Amino acid sequence: MTLAVIALGSNLENPVQQVEAALQRLAALPATRLVRRSACYRTAPVGYAEQPDFINAVCEVDTELDAEALLAQLLQLEQDFGRVRSFRNAPRVLDLDLLLMDGVTRDGEFLTLPHPRMHERAFVMLPLAEMAPERQLPQGRVGDIAAALDGSGVSRLPRRN
Image (cartoon, rainbow, N blue to C red; front, side):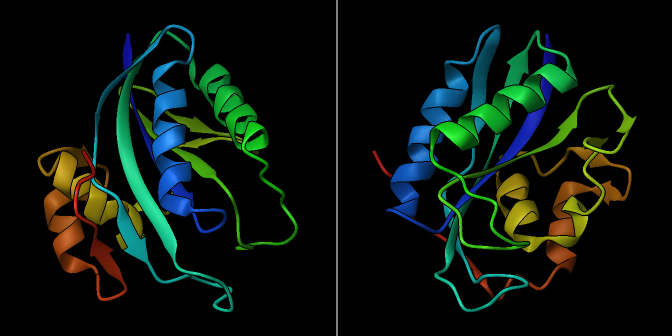
């Protein structure tokens, strides 16, 4: 089993429900077990600003899938949820990003691990710091990286029961 970290985001069609449903679907992937997840966070859009706020979260899964197979499952989930890739940073029902897999590196056209920009994104690092502040990334400790980012556009939502 390999521990993988996945970022989730949505800003269409009841985004909190979309993220929660996606977490359930991630837990049901073949040869994969949901280990833990962050709370949901409301995030101002980045890039294309003329769209609703996003709901973001991060989770860890243990998986027997290799990186490419896991990515294929994530892309299929996005498609199952109705993801349409109309333009860069467009509104979306579901966005799933494979951030890292312990002990796995990739530098390909479709998959780079660890994710090359995750350490720059407060909407990724704040939920990740909530969940695993001591985790080490190539850029440093998650908690330290998150603390150094401007998190003014990111707010933690209360946990749902």
